[in-house]
Length: 154
Image (cartoon, rainbow, N blue to C red):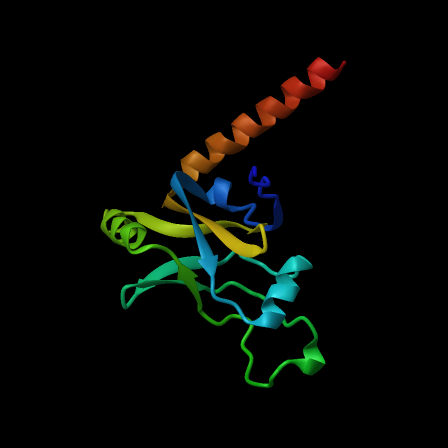
């Protein structure tokens, strides 16, 4: 019997990641979430634009990601939409990431939240922050591509 292909729906993307960071390697991890957070994510009610990933106590955590409650009136009063959320990665990946992140100027940033089958996954990247002149070059390249596209349309 053949396996069914896994369908992935992207719910949230970090649009600023490509502009602010140079992506070196991408990884995938599961997220430890509460039930109402999963429902909220599936509706696309979240923001990972300011979020980043830290290594604390031998585990990875997603910090500063905003996931509002699904139903505000049914949420416990102690719920914090900016709480740290644990990432589920293998020990091998964790060791590799800890070793690579120790290099100067590298950070872990979230790229997108999506479903893979019935599970929610986070795609994140090992990245280096761009300098101001690199961002200017990115803007120039983007504008040039846009102009070429306009001319080709005519």
